[in-house]
Length: 114
Length: 108
Image (cartoon, rainbow over all chains, first blue to last red; front, side):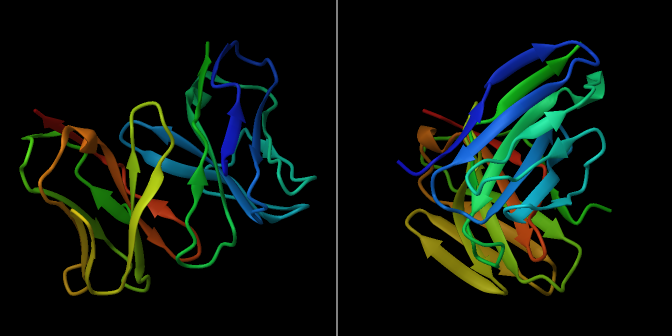
């Protein structure tokens, strides 16, 4: 089954404790990205990657890191999480980044930072 | 001003009603628009995409773009309880820019 998987689905952590949210896709997609979704603000892009070893900042990259060492994986790293990073996070992938390319979203990771 | 604006709702309608969901956009340079549907506790999934002006129909769903007024609409005919979800409009170009989503509740 074609899918984007994320782990963990739910995470509660404390300020400053490094964490990684994994993302994997099995569709051989070149393009992957991370979004956060907040009430009243909608989906905002954090980082994206157009291919292996190619990553770039989205609209809200502060406090996040990513890496793309393999085509299928695109982990999101929070080196020192803060309460304002409490949010619902989605990983997404698409074949390309051209117009009309559907982005496939993962099921989401709900993160709470206390 | 946000690039894509959307009324958050919630919108509550009886089963069988015609639903109209709307967005406005600010940058007329972009011509591809998408509608994503997001069920509770799930990721968004593409419902329809449309290019430039005009209508696109897919079953009970019709997407419409009015370039002159910078308006994007999604119409749902014969709405069903299974249509209850959040609907996100998005404009595509250099990247996807989403509206905040409109929550729709269809009650039996």
